[in-house]
Length: 468
Image (cartoon, one colour):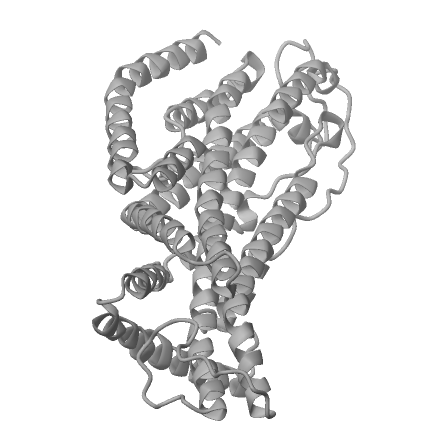
């Protein structure tokens, strides 16, 4: 929030420079960071969910065959065998809880689907790229690089946690089986790291290693699909936050950036009004910014995300809450000196990190969106309203007034994450319904109460525009 305030203060102090009527030189800005979602694409390619851009026919056919094989083996055969295994473990509370937790994790990874990829084209569109205005602190190219770096860091970190969880489960039994195969005196484990129905016996070191590989292929494929889709959704919210920050800076520096494109004087001879050339460029630029804002808010990204993920996120949070509670139970019943104890700890940390990523980046979008209304109001000054520009700013102000909270049922904000963690730690799993319905009723009340405020706000902006 401090960055946006400092940007507004600098814009106020430096307006006189652009109003002086002198010619300003056009400076070339650095380009935006390209391929914002590069890390997410590579992870999803490993899961068979994102074809490569290379147009080589052999590569495309090979990847298509790989995707079909992964889908048939992992999503169809192995997932069905996981649910079949519940029949064989219902007498063991430990294995039943563990299998239900993993089944929920894999099920949520499968239902998230591929609709998120359709939103990327809007967020990466060059139509909404702006020139930087570094003298006022608006370095949009640097901001895009910083946001891209943040997304890559958290994507890699989440991927490392997922790999650490699986490695900690598969490495110890693999080493034991290899030691026995070389003539060691250790006893072969009787179970695999994760219980699932197997089509063959694994009572020898060789068959046990084959069973480990058979199961690990499916588990790592699950990890790639879950990490890929979750981090893609997280990075989309990260990109939305960047777009909202860019919109704020574009509004605050619109006159200074437009003045660079004028090849004549900036003011009329009486120095009371903007020149026709500057007014025309201002109008087109503000139209672009308003269209960008409406695309992010209402007609494109946020609207589509809420429609696609409002119920999926609800199911995600409830499933994650159950998984966290089950992990706490499994940790409490596992000896602290056993290898399984640390595997359960890593799995619990990974699932908690997954939920906090959703809440953290959703909270960033909420905070950025809450400041857009103020910036839009600040942009509505006399020299920006003329020439029919005020209508576009008024419409944008009415769109941005409500703000953004993902999603409609569960706002992905940090206070809800703390509520869910408290429910998990206290063991009162059914208390999760309290924050869920509290947030839902609070949002319904805010929507009803905001209608009158919106009418007053639009009326105030209309009067202000007419006065100017």
